[in-house]
Image (spheres, rainbow, N blue to C red):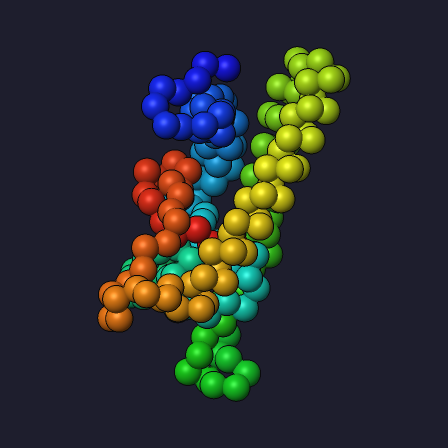
Length: 190
């Protein structure tokens, strides 16, 4: 592994290399999305996945999770309802509050997508050595755990409000990440 010049440590060098090799994984993901989800756009698919993760999510939280204006998220939901992918239900405690739920069609779409991805990944993994597959799985599990821990830390900072010493009335910059396939930089969320 080549060291990145300057004041960067080995983690930065590894991040550069991981970013380069992650393209293969992202290509598998994107190809599966294109084959499976011709019925929905990328933004609609992200919305469906977010509703799946947070069943009964309200429109405001969906907009926040998608880093969209509330009006844009509402129009996106209108299109997903019309496509038979989402259902809107009045809230239990406040009938003005709308909760979002996946339809069976949306669940089938996600199952198709995941099945396609798994088939493509299995074909690629078959070309690797057993040792390489085990090392990859071990590393990805540790990566997932670290990413979840970091995401939970960022969420607790967001919930706590501005950091001590931050000028009042000014938002505090939170760590960001690039959303795959969009080039958009967003605050990290679960």
